[in-house]
Length: 227
Image 1 (cartoon, helix red, strand yellow):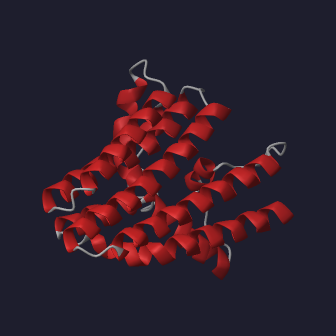
Image 2 (spheres, one colour):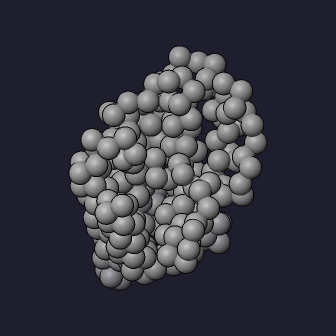
């Protein structure tokens, strides 16, 4: 268990610098990885509820709940590995939680912003971003099903956990940026923007970026599937 107490050796993901301090506390309890994942889901959904308000306080509370969700999401895998409690169900539950938290956040942010600004297109931006997150989830399920007989097949959580791997070429660097940095530490972006009450600025970028995300994910999975 001592390895989880070691400070991270890489700058990214930033969430690791927070979770490694909390994981040892979980290891001293009887709490299971799936229970930690459930807590991550709860905080993620609470975050979405906060963002539907469209006001400053709601945004701050939503960003803090999202931060907790991301930290817990990182802790569940660490606890599972140390306690040797990894399971197929746990991996699928973790993937589903990631998807629900991401999709609900964008829909809620779009709704709250549209109510505040009185313009419906903000809501549709949020729906487009959520749709992109949903497509990426389906892509992950498809390729995991195709590769489940292979020893080196990876779920979404396993791919995210390999953030320390150094990219080999330009394409790997592009995928690394989208899939290791922006995703793992997205909560930090939300928190900073919430402090300035401009989280809404994410919506048009996310409506496009979410599509880029699942396309690069699809391409990354396809490359791995062929090799």
